[in-house]
Length: 190
Length: 190
DNA sequence: AGGGTGTCAATAACCAGTTAGTTACGGTAG
DNA sequence: CTACCGTAACTAACTGGTTATTGACACCCT
Image (cartoon, rainbow over all chains, first blue to last red; front, side, top):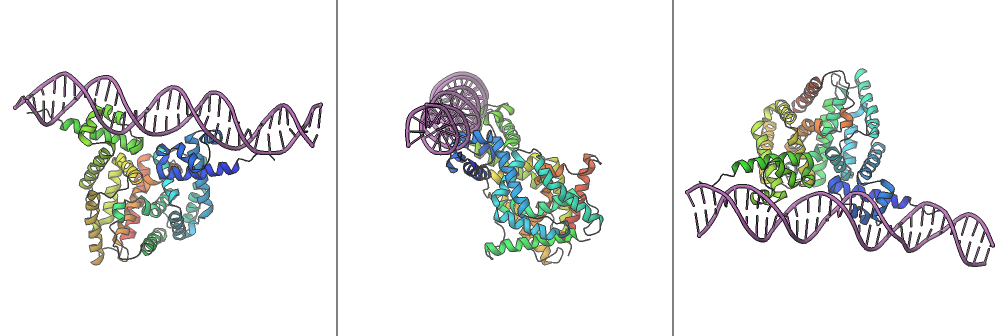
């Protein structure tokens, strides 16, 4: 049996995910990724080409995990919004990574388009058959739902800090989730 | 009268605004800022301390411009959302700058807290007097409205690209704005 | 004289990417 | 059985270029 590099490759991807999520593409350090992966820096170039290609590879994998973890349903947008929010709370690094990509590498990857297309089509279908409020571009519906879900992360810490410090952090999160789902319900109601 | 540096200072701030908006804190180049401002690099350190302090100064000024340009009204959240959206479309660099700050410098500045506090208080007041849907934490209302407004910018280019290429870009924007305002209306309705 | 304004060139650190290897191991010729 | 070979996996040390920051100095204007 020849030597196997799959484990090293995986460790490198995991480390890159953390590093890129924390510092972005420009701020990430190749040395740190190698160190965290307990691998040699040279292997990054051997397996993934360069820093940018490594970033792209990490992004595609992260998108795949998300798609597998959160099923989409145009007939239950509130449920989708809640599930997506839960996934984001469980994986905040993925949210950060997505933001970095938007700012530092706003290219349109085929994988991402392929992930969105069926969702948009499903929304259009649900609108046409009256199961969902019509009159809006399906893309806009998708954007607004995602904007609502992401608002917990895209809003400033200064605004977060203004919420009353009465309830626990757990309760604070549950309240926000409930408000979010309620708005999506109103958005979707025919 | 000693020589006047106010114009140099302003040019430096303008240049820094553009550079930080384009490349973020880590990606920005002090040399480029000085060059764009037609000033000497050394002056950045003389007037603003260092790169990070310059970034903070730029942020505070940008926040001030926004606060002056878009008046807040808890009694007309749809109108506020529309006006905020228009301002963002007119000043996309400001939106990018805010995103960079969230990722690279998530500190809570007194200026930002001071900008949010009266808005949140106004929402709480409007809820208490029945002019606005109650039952949600005022901070959540603010977050969700801003999340909706920002969704045009926070969503992936891959999703943007999926909208039908029938209408003009102008019309595309107007449609999105209308959908956005409609959702805020539903959110605010008692 | 002296502080505010501005210039020029150095410095010290940093960092992506590369060069020139070494190690581990299964196959194979003798 | 064993000495050798080819190859995949891995490594240490370096290079060339970049970058934030600073020291030293010149030019005003009062």
